[in-house]
Image 1 (cartoon, rainbow, N blue to C red):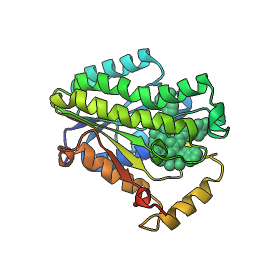
Image 2: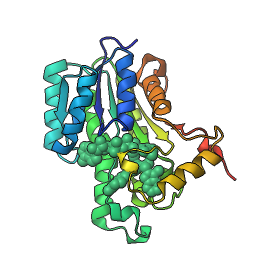
Image 3: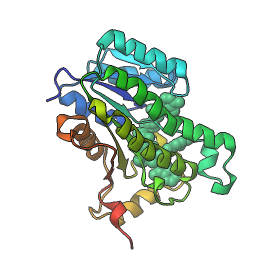
Length: 253
Ligand code: NAD
Ligand code: 0WE
């Protein structure tokens, strides 16, 4: 279905990463894939995964560096020429900021969370759009904490609000070039980014009890919606935040 189409995926850290779930779905649909890693430690994890899907384009990119972003897209341009889609699946905040009272968030912690988790989507989209000469689609990952207060999500909630709003402004900006931009708001999934979050297990069981589908969100749930948005089937959808959360967000009490 996506034979000959080329997708850049940022944010694979291991086999549990949401980005890896989407990568596998794209690969099964016949797409060609480029993966990125932020540092050597992650590179060691990503290279074997890339080999599993016959991907030979594995490039470094710490999204806090404009220079590494420029290098990434220069490499992609020379290897591929054009690009059909991008998956942005990156977030980071200081661990202390996900534990301290929100009113104690430091300027440094705020800037870090917003830089890595929100600005990076704008930085990636602008550069990617230059290579999307035949239109294209970008997706990013968000969480309900953007809209509602989730205990301890704190500055990440503010970053996700900025991310979802950036998705709308990017959609308006890039729409004339037939480029769609959307966010998937996923329910909690036990990934590396969720490890070490205090009481995450309890959060998962409370979620499954309350969600209309009475279960937790899976990597496959998110991957299937990602595939849809990145395929021609998603052609009329842009600027949206789509919930893939077993219906959790609709429940009041
Ligand atoms: P993950 O740890 O597998 O992925 C996070 C990725 O961000 C990692 O690959 C990490 O290397 C990358 N990253 C962090 N800082 C970076 C930087 N400076 N430059 C480049 N890459 C950097 O965890 P995940 O749960 O798959 O997270 C992916 C996305 O999904 C995040 O945006 C997260 O907020 C979002 N999300 C996660 C959940 C969940 O419960 N797991 C729910 C909703 C949304
Ligand atoms: O977006 C996320 C997690 C993002 C994240 C996780 C970490 C842990 C390790 C960002 N930065 C860091 N920094 C670290 O040092 N999620 C949606 C998962 C998540 O995180 C929570 C959640 C959920 C759900 C934190 C508190 C409460 C709920």
